[in-house]
Image 1 (tube, chains in turn yellow, blue):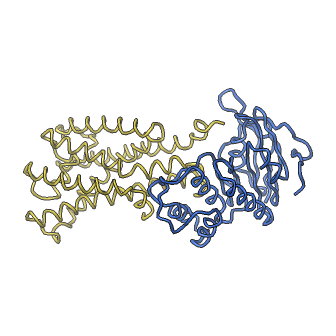
Image 2 (cartoon, chains in turn purple, green):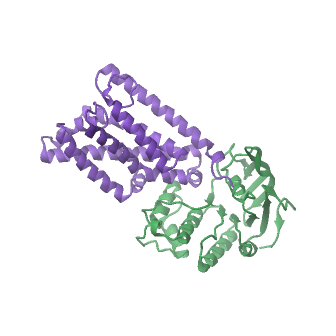
Image 3 (cartoon, one colour):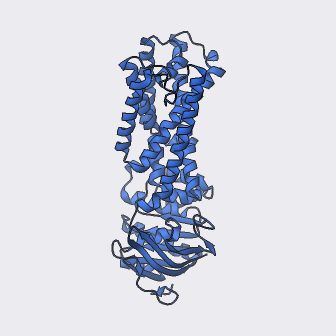
Length: 231
Length: 221
C-alpha cells in the first residue's frame, strides 16, 4: 500500500488538496451543509442539479484518474518484467488492482476528512460525529463506484494511450453527470442511495459491472503477449 | 541451471517469428544472441523467459516446462528493451520498490550494485532527470541485484559510456564465474567476442548455426 502511495507524484497531491478546498467552497455555496451529503452529492449519489455541480463531478473523476495513472502506467509499461517478479501474470494483475484500490481508498478518505476538518473549522461539524455506520455505508458505496471508474481506466490503458483514456473517461463522466438527475434508473452506475430496493439493485448492478470489467482486464492482459512487442 | 528449448516455433498471424528452435543453455556460460534487426533476437529472449507461449515445442527449465509447470523461471533477472521507472522517485527508491516484491535483495545489495555502476544511491536526483545511460544502468541492476541465477539482457550495452561498458563486462565475467546462466544480445561484435562462450545467430526467426547440440562454440571461456 505504501508503495502505491509513493507512486503518486507530489504535483498530484497539491492539485488534489487544492481541488478539495475549491470543491468545499463551491459545495457550501450550493447550500450543502454536512460533509457526508457533500461527498455523496459530488459523486452523483444525488442529482447534480446545476452545471457547477456537474463540473465538479467531472473534475473529481478526472482527479481520481490523475492520482492513479502513474501507478497503473508503471505496471502496464513494465508488465513483462513485473510479471516475472510476481511469478505470474495473475499475480501481477492482483498487485496492480491491490495498489490502485489502496490509492482509491486513501483518495476518498482524504477527500472526506479534509471536508470534515474544514467544516469543523468553518461550519457546524464535529470530527467525533463524522464517523458512524451511516458514514461507512455511504463511503463504501462511493468507493464501489470509484472502483469501477479505476478498473475502467485500467482496461482502457491496456488498450489505449494515456490521452485516449482521459478523453474516453472524460466523455463517460460528462454523460454520467448529465444523466444523474434520473435516479430511477435501476442499473445506473452512480452511487444512488434513495429507496432501499433501488439502492440494492444499484449495488448489485455495480458489483456485476465491476466483475465484468475485471474479467475483461484479465483476458486483455493474458492476450497481451500476442499483440504487443513483436520483434 | 539448464534451459532446454525443443523445436520451439512461435507463429503470430501467418508469420513464424521463431521457427523450430532447439538449443540447450547451461549455467556458467555467457550466450550471445546475434542477428539483424527483426531477426527474432528479442523474441528469442522472451521465449527463454516464458513471456511468449509456443505454437509448437517447449522450453524446460531444470526439467520443468514453462507455461505448464511454471509461468516463469523462478530465478530470472531480465532487461528487455527500454527500462521504465517511476520518474518522480530516485533510482534507489525505484530499485527498493522493485526489490520489495520478492524480498530477496537487501538495501545493502542495491547500494553496492549502484556504487559498482557509479550511481550515487544517496542522491536525491529523480529518475526523470537521469540520462538514458543512467536509466539503462538501473535496468541492468534490477536484473542482477537479487542474485538471480538466470540473467537475460537485451542490448545491455546500449547508451553506456566506455567506463560503464568495461564495468558491465567485468560484472558479467564475475557472474559467469559464479555459475550464472547469462544470455545477451548485442549489435556490437566486440562485446560478443570478448564475453560470450557461445554465439547463437538468428535469421528470420531461425537459428543459423545449430551445430553441436545446437550451439556453436566461438570462444572457450
